[in-house]
Length: 95
Image 1 (cartoon, helix red, strand yellow):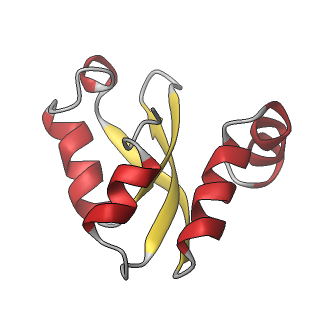
Image 2 (tube, rainbow, N blue to C red; image 1 turned 45 degrees about the vertical axis):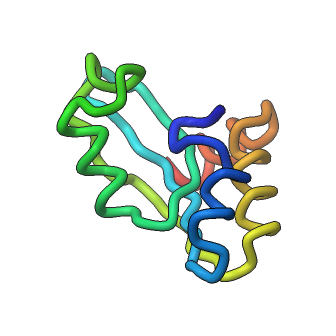
Image 3 (spheres, rainbow, N blue to C red; image 1 turned 180 degrees about the vertical axis):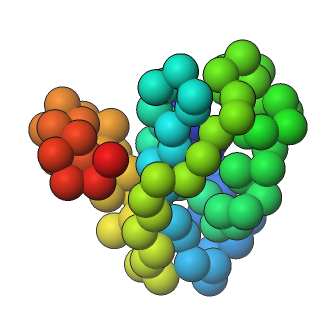
């Protein structure tokens, strides 16, 4: 499960929504990659401490996001960003 929850679960809740693959950074240089249909709400959840995995590293800030109306491509891009080559790409081009 990613920083923003299960991609399949999100797609069932909002099948026609625009999905955003987002890169977040905390003050301690912690990085998160995730997929969401509501970027503002998800960032607020991270910063309010609702996510136990990210609460200790707040505040979080949005570094980059890529919006897509194609659910499959958005999920594939999120998966890529979490891979070794995706980490290298993000570090070179997106952070």
